[in-house]
Image (tube, rainbow, N blue to C red; front, top):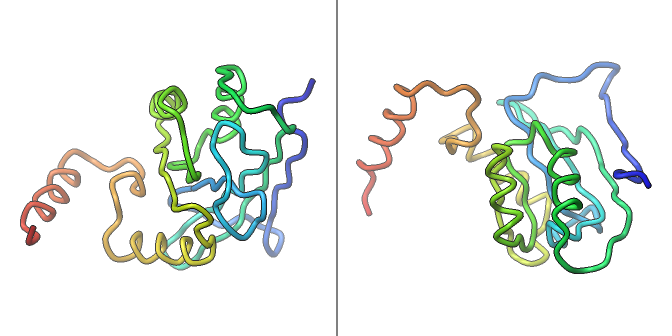
Length: 155
């Protein structure tokens, strides 16, 4: 029985752009974040760079019954390796633990959050003040600088 039912990888203009980080979204509609991580049928993976957002691939899993299944969770996480974060409408503690072990940040989106708006917000955040999970191979000095900047902000 296959883990991934279908996988579509997109290449723009015959070449793949260099991405600073990748993010996956649990989205059946392809327009909104509208699925629970553990039972998600479809994930859209986008690559982000300083001047672009690009759909890289769409992963479609077999429909699965609700309920906890660690094997199913691990299969999804393995397929999302290389992503810095994954957005879904919900994610259980076990899945969050497995994501963390794979160095993927699990983020809950508002139910039916519009994907195009979320992509734009993430790109603005990355360009102007990237979150730690958006920055690859950040050194300890960079992390300390970002922490000090955060502490200097008004609370």
